Length: 193
Image 1 (cartoon, rainbow, N blue to C red):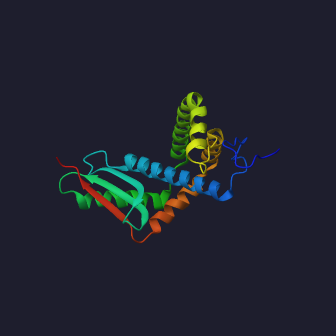
Image 2 (image 1 turned 60 degrees about the vertical axis):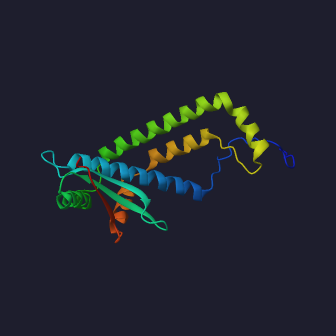
């Protein structure tokens, strides 16, 4: 194999096959966090009282708490003057998690959703790529010599492997870590019209 010095376009076969371990761990962490959010949201939907709930929705997201700090944010929507009751419902869900954790059944559901999202994303990219790969590579070479064209086949396969490999214990451990954060943010939104 030979490399031409300063080529206009450099094509590499399976450029991510020996993916840096740090990048692999970062992607795994991102997927685990996303699954934890989905699992808490499922648990909240299941456990909000069916008769006259005070909170209309409870969600967990990551986001910026301030301009300098990232973090995790519980979002609680409620109606009327039910803010204290809605907060109580949130803490009952958290208590339930602390006692029981997330279920394998719900994890399997989330995995199926994530695999489906991965398939759809890959198909969308494949459809787009098949009609514009030459134009994209030419554009990279012409306008930005520092750009890297990523083979989405490798990223798709890696995401699929990671999603399938993630264990319930990893997600429960992450959520316990989230709950141990002292400066927890709960965003209340009154949805009364």
